[in-house]
Image 1 (tube, rainbow, N blue to C red):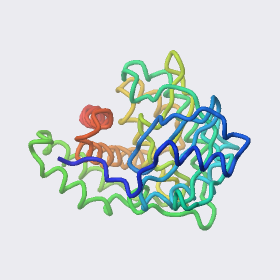
Image 2: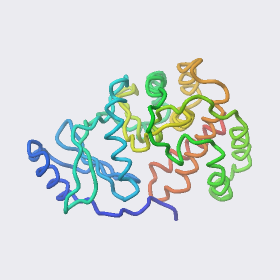
Image 3: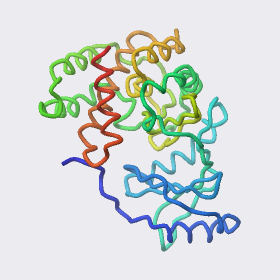
Image 4: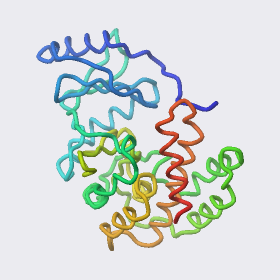
Length: 294
């Protein structure tokens, strides 16, 4: 059974309460409640308008620092709400790593909304990506598993697709993968990327409108096709067409082929590693269906 990686440290409510009271005593009496336990980070809601975000394993420490460094600039140009850091937490004897207090972004995760009801967000999500995908400044990190040439993810995808019990459609998926690998590589400057744009990190308002985008731990520089994969991870065929049309001439045909390839990378990662997380398993299943739909 393949599931979420184990935590290096157990992040308990009492520890988070002490961190907040010691470093932000003005917020020490705000109600605190755990709301998310992801692969890399644990998130607590703090009062009505803030959240506390802490790494749960050593590999995620740099991701918190990347959010603190790059999210303020992203927020300035984003047309939708993002979780801007308002406090960079310091390590203590209770908790050994940096952590953050960020703005709470209200909304329902698209992963918890029926795919047929996500369509109203298509054009707005495209506008968000047009605002995000600007040339990265020198020094922005390159994530070794996001936004890199697709050939660098070949071994992982091929190995996952060998599991014919999990992927009975492997022959068709291998054909999609071959087409994506054959597409022309990204030749532009490294662009700013979200890096983990899937329905669990896209928030919707009532009626399906885009409310915000969260979890920028994989922010980095590279090929924007990795973020465009959300077209298959989140939308059905009709909404995906509107998403693509809204991006227009900013995205060429080869980039869309690579984006479909990245959708396969991410969908198989979710399906192969989420046996203990039905929500993310379902995101992977939906992505595979949409990839095969075209």
